[in-house]
Length: 186
Image (cartoon, rainbow, N blue to C red; front, side, top):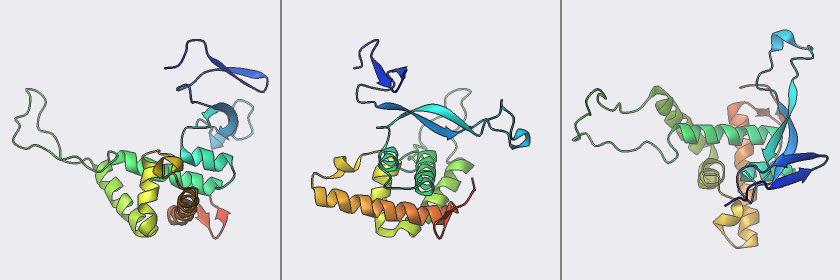
């Protein structure tokens, strides 16, 4: 449990603790989510802003910090994570059709359109990744660290290499990278 009042000192800025005792906050320049291209160049509309990032948030952040993966690979991993979470983490849940609906609640719908699309996208990712799909699910989907998967340093290095190759394949599949060039595409 985090102690009250715990602060982390980063450069000349003091930040209140975020997350948990293991959190490692740092200031990073990130894309401004509120940037409006119609007002490009205005001082009130910057393309980049300074944000606090937990350096131990996920294995993808750690790999990017160590410069083992590039921006296109990070974006591909984040998109895979979003698809994984849209489907409900471990896929669609089962339904108990024998239960009667509660008054006013109506019957539970089987799957939303978003979940169906996420299932299709996840099947495409499985096809693209091949045997690297399981590592991608554990690291990018579930947010587990590579060190949690095995104690063997050799296997950890192999998993990181498989993860990097999978992220490169996904970056090309999603259109973030084309033969080494980062393309702007959402």
